Length: 206
Ligand SMILES: Nc1nc2c(c(=O)[nH]1)N[C@@H](CN(C=O)c1ccc(C(=O)N[C@@H](CCC(=O)O)C(=O)O)cc1)CN2
Ligand SMILES: NCC(=O)N[C@@H]1O[C@H](COP(=O)([O-])[O-])[C@@H](O)[C@H]1O
Picture 1 (cartoon, helix red, strand yellow):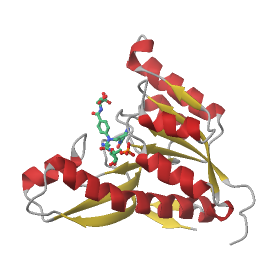
Picture 2 (tube, helix red, strand yellow):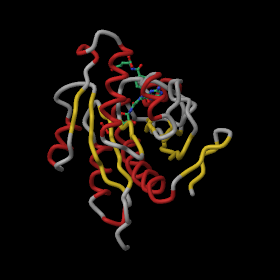
Picture 3 (cartoon, rainbow, N blue to C red):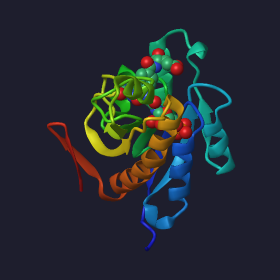
């Protein structure tokens, strides 16, 4: 595949191990992917995710809530730092903070979040555990455009994953993450290369 001219600039926000970020870093190493990671940020120190970005030579930043007087100040600072990297798309990849009014005012419509459940089921911080507790036989992962709700935004892509009788939340989450990383890479690549529109909650490429 030929290189894509003017690859889209991604800013990726993480809170944890960063395996989804790693999948994007690996994909962006291919010229034909159409995107590159311009920066990675976190809401806490010492995350595996930021270590992965540093190893790849990607600029990183941390904004912890306790560095700011109010949650609104944190949100505005995060919005400003992200804006300085001039992103075309912002990917929340295991980012365990809700972004607020200022962040969405600056970047709304260009922020996607990957969630380990089939939205609108099981929003929040423990999608795999909540799916297991409910007893569903199929769960999965969802990529959606972030709005001011919790995991309520327009859906870009979903992938199903079976729940096994012997699963605990950790084994289920790991199986979801294998499918999630593939979905994330495929879908972010399409968004970068083709663009997308949102009409009446329907997200379409091109
Ligand atoms: N405005 C939005 N922000 C974010 C969304 C979203 O849909 N709208 N999705 C999240 C990710 N998310 C699950 O997908 C999620 C993350 C965190 C929370 C939450 O309640 N966080 C607490 C802090 C928890 C912690 O620090 O461990 C908080 O924000 O105070 C709910 C859902 C990404 N952001
Ligand atoms: N509610 C948000 C949430 O649960 N996010 C989830 O955290 C994991 C991060 O893994 P990673 O750090 O290895 O990419 C991913 O499964 C992501 O969907």
